[in-house]
Length: 225
Picture 1 (spheres, rainbow, N blue to C red):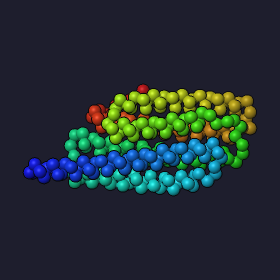
Picture 2: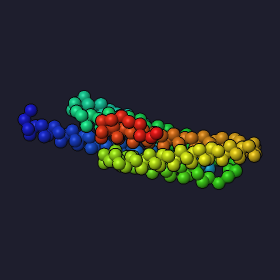
Picture 3: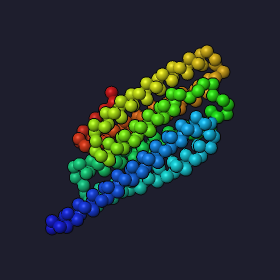
Picture 4: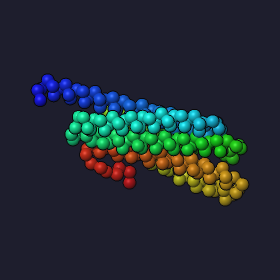
């Protein structure tokens, strides 16, 4: 292949790869918005949020399919090697985790409708905080992905630890409420479930961090121990 042709092919590949990363960012931004809306629905007793987020979820699913097709076309047509191949392979896993975060956001919104049937027996404090932390994690891990910044992943892992701690704290607190007043058990169990959804979102975001680490180092490693 002539040098000029090789450079042209490389530019074309890099352009496609840049478009791919941009689409992952757009998908991540849509899911971040879903998380924010889901937690807001819980705080405001919005019974319609589940249906609205179903529409968001359809958009995210479409991103997932389109990005997967882009990845497969790049592999088939460009035959990337080494780091470029790892980037595409990591992207295929990353979009799956992003999509799962969106699914959990829909679950939170649908739970909000169930909880809106009667006034909450306690103010929501820990759950909105967990939602904020999940959004922060998602923003940071996507920045680390696009900028190939594995140092930033350490901060994501630390925030995941904070989400885990809040989940455990809220679980114990709500079990205590149930023991004192079994009549609130229905609401308390739903809140425990919401906290669990948020904790699982954080776990999927941590998985993304591990894929970014692999993308840059070639090493598959569990970063959260």
